[in-house]
Image (cartoon, rainbow, N blue to C red; front, side, top):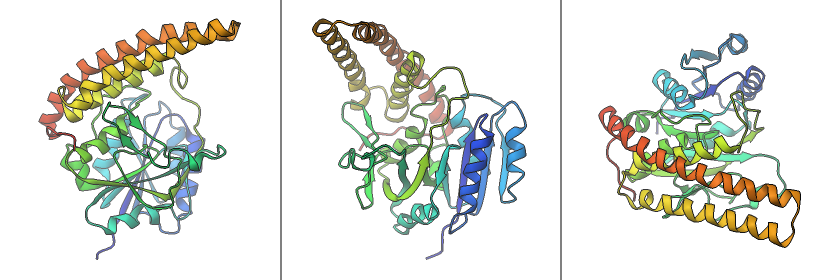
Length: 325
């Protein structure tokens, strides 16, 4: 069998120091990739200067600016020459054998995409969610658990964008990488994977393909898991389900009910704590849950509408009309 080549794509925005460390780890791979493509949306030249220190890396510009990670991925795919396109985040540092382990499952021609394990450094993270890695549930939820180490390659439905890969032609088959997922760009990587699964293609998770994810601070407005994050997460998730599976698919129809039940449980739980043990913290948590509930529900409604509009454009681009399998 002909040995597959790999292009590594790194989307980034205003993290030149992290890009440097990411490139240093890629330079130390036991098997080098065909090319490394850094796609930079930063407003300054700091990242370009870093990339110029690494002769094997190519610098690409994304002039759309902040919050356009999927668009950066798309630019990388367009420029890539490898049989496989592997994505890592700028704050994800690969192990020495990472590329070997990413490419190994592709020996099976039925495998379309391969993802790897994320190491965050939390105690016991490798045992969390061993039986539920990268799953799309009937109620529309996505399970991650990408820190888990099942000790073997397992089939999955989606990946985390910090450590995932696909056959390049498979990405092109569905119209490339689809943009339109606002920052913090939640679910944009799941869109790529679920389009493959909706066509019946096989995706696998290889826990031996490891990256250490340091979760660098956001370089854009807002913080992780603030109210805006919850709104965008629900908006993007609902939009993704409509775009990939359609507005009448079971996953899409179930998701609003799932979110409604989730927010109701959160409010009830916070209210119970506030009654049982009144304190400043318990009242604060109750207020937060009450405020967050309508924000998340509005996100779902907006996402369903945005997904319907984007789906029509996706089909024109070649995204196809997929059904879940």
